[in-house]
Length: 115
Image (cartoon, rainbow, N blue to C red; front, side):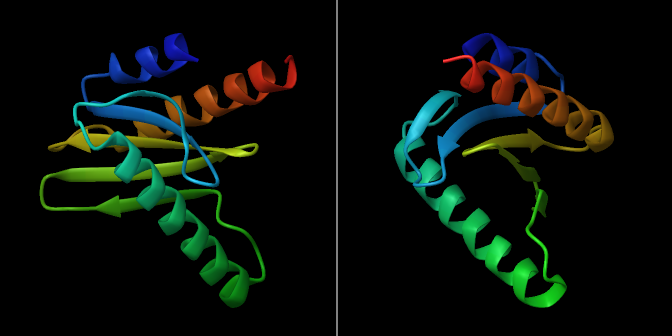
């Protein structure tokens, strides 16, 4: 898992990559913060709430969420029973980040299924 996350953080745009359970517990992460447990719990709660919203509005679950801030983005994507959270800094190729996240999620799902 660390290798998959490291490949994401090797992208110029990506600052952090963290993998959490839907309960908010950290599974693995490369994070430039000492608050990784808080960030993981908050991100899982936010993703769950957004999923509830999309279910109500579109009768469908959220797959990928992008939150834009003044300094970058927070992107979240479901990977089976896990959530991949990636933060970016500044302006960058967000499409590339999204494609790499989708690839990473496929690899993570296969990795977890092999256990």
